[in-house]
Amino acid sequence: MHTEVHKWYSPELGKDMELKVYGHYGKPFIVFPCSRGRYFDFEGQGMIDKISGYIDCGKIKLYAIDSVDIESWYNFSVSPAERNARHNQYDKYIADEVIPFIRKHTKSPNERPMATGTSLGAYHAVNFFLRHPDLCGGTIALSGLYRMDRNEFRLSWGDVKEVYYNSPIHFLPNVTEPTILNWCRKSAIIICTGQGAWENEAIEDTKALDNTFKAKGIPAWIDYWGSDVNHDWPWWYIQMNYFLSKLY
Image 1 (cartoon, helix red, strand yellow):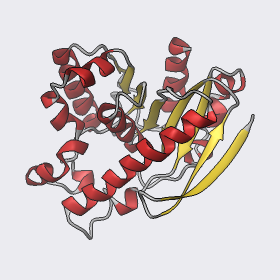
Image 2 (spheres, rainbow, N blue to C red):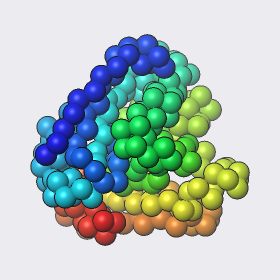
Image 3 (spheres, rainbow, N blue to C red):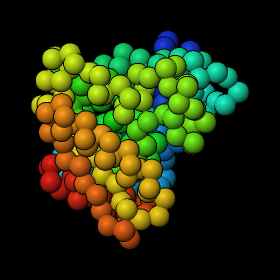
């Protein structure tokens, strides 16, 4: 498998950031790591090996990026507004630095890469797509939480106003801009959760997104797997292969 590691100083984040490319050709995917993760986690957790067939035959090409979660959503020492501001810098890093890099790397100036991830990576994938459907062509999101007033983030209902535009379940119902909605409607949206251990909150959030997509007339494949399907990598291997087989 062809791989490359790239590193540059990010003006948006004020520090060096790394990403790893997997594959030589195919539909590009931005891969978001799980909470507080690094660009090499998708590989380290075994996902690259499990979907290598799609990479090796040139159907997909992955761009696995770093997170700044420890400086944003998991930096409990600063205010919600400061955590949100750091995430917004991360969002701009992807939009203004990673997307142009992918377009240059693929020699496709109008490319809209897909976004994917599991657990918190699924949140990042969905959040980035919904904020930038003109830049991102859709998502495969597995077992994500999509509202920021969850216990995991230690943000209360009263804090939502500070993080509103990074909390999809809160901001999406109020999106009315026709251009944004039209971009969403012509994108490939797949959101999946199991119904087994550690998936209760993911089920609730996935259902909420499902209802909003329907209300907005946005086609989306929302899939609920069985009560034996847990919040864990062995099931994410199976889910990712299944959805990639349907897309490519």
